Length: 468
Image (cartoon, rainbow, N blue to C red; front, side, top):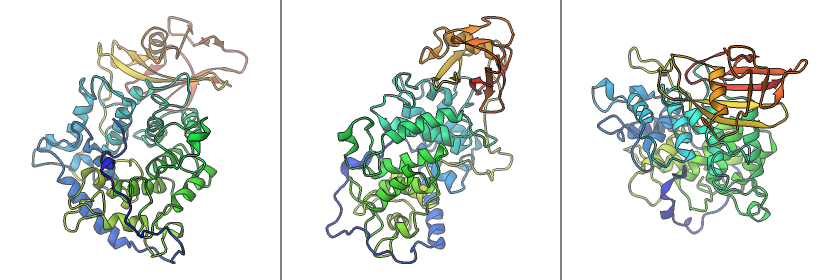
């Protein structure tokens, strides 16, 4: 299922007479008070979307994106109840849905897991530790493209790579640390850079290496998402890729604060663009994004919000709110990117985070594994292990990876020693030599000498790197 908004097929052309930005007034017009009112009303509307069973996720285009907007607006998912039964809070219900063996479907795609990572993180569910049998980070690792390093899922669906980078860069550990090695983010960021069009933006499909595709007009929405993904990977807003994206967006600003999307003026396109600017620390109400009539992209979004009611319409001509547009609109107006760290709950005794703390003996579980031999030959995979206790070992993970338990295969081809608890002296044909040796880190923490006896806990992202 695509991560793009589904209602675009019904989009209409921009109204006649809409003008592109020209002279820029000194001040933006959406005041802090207006934004605060929009936030309060938007949160109130999204609360009405919660089902009687406490859920936000259902079949088709899911309302689970509401968690990203709620978090950006300061509302914890555990505080969302359809009534008085605390077991029906949105976080508990969503966690149960993600843990189910039937989720996401019999034919999952990479964006299912990316969407779940971004929203479980916002809901206060550690995405690597949903339960003993569900590690969403490992589920994503299974979609690494060995033949095209840096792409996640089929490269033709560039959307999957952008949201892969958004998920891995933004879904940090419970302590706030980066979860995967920078090398993984860097190679994915390189793939995103390679797909930037000549006009400074991006489109949904792969363009890298195709001069005709790179010369095509870019999409407002994907430009917002792609620039946000680069910033999530640590790319500064002064980087040429970001400044070129800003130039593209600035050049497509209309007089009413909307962007000249190929789908017409709409809330989702503005929301994605503004979220991209927010993610990179660029003011969507600054001089660059104030039109000739004094309107900003935030102004347009607030104008799309029903008063009263709080929902956002998709098109300016719509007479009813759209759930998906309401998520995109609210998240952007309150300053959010494509996810946010979970806020502290107000429910007494409720923790900010929930996560499983141990493997279940005899229950198959996935572990995300990265292997960097120091030559730029980076490998990523998901390894299925069946622990015999509440923890497992690096040796057990590597033994499983050399067999048929790694997706994609070939992540690890051989390990020395092949048994016991000793120090690892060779991996995949690269042996310790002189000052260079294999080191291991868990959740991108401090590196230590790699040993078969190294304890691996549930949800740990295991990273091996060869070097001094």
